[in-house]
Image (tube, rainbow, N blue to C red; front, top):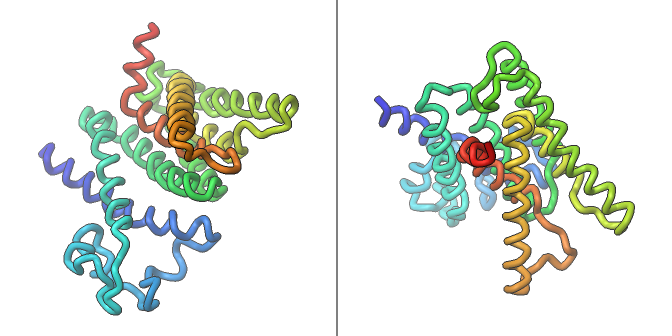
Length: 263
């Protein structure tokens, strides 16, 4: 039965990953992720259900459009696999122990952060629509936690996620304001600040601090490597939203263990 659940989660990840492909492509362009329906970008032919089966359509069609035979970028297949692979450790961490609400909340959050990762990495921006969707999800988690405390927060306090929304984002806001005042330079984009408010609602203030610290460490390493390889951004912009996404995923998997090291 356990194997069946993992196959189900993997399949669920493939399906969601297929939709995330649409979000990553269309959101930066300001286009709807619903209309128009999926179509071949080359010949414009509307794709059928059989053309959109995650993983299997790509393999069956040998990576080509059924109609014009143009090659389909492998990145679409990789996104489906990436999402499915990201879900599996989350299910092992939460779902296998019966924490299904925690699993679905974590999977939903990571779905948003996967889109954030790639859009921010390429375009250096975080769409407000993603923040709004994430915020609505965090509100739902907060309301649920009020009536049934979630194990992900670790202390049973109903106010934990509310403090989480304020603490991490508040810290980023203060640092950003100080840098603007003293250095006349923005330390963090407002999108990063809003995004971390959303994340805090899902993982609480303790895990939020861990996620923030890990994000700082990863971003510092990335900047250092970029400097050594002389590949730093010409405008000096850092895709901190991408690093936040990675830091949050690591925290979802190991945050509890990291917190215990300090208690």
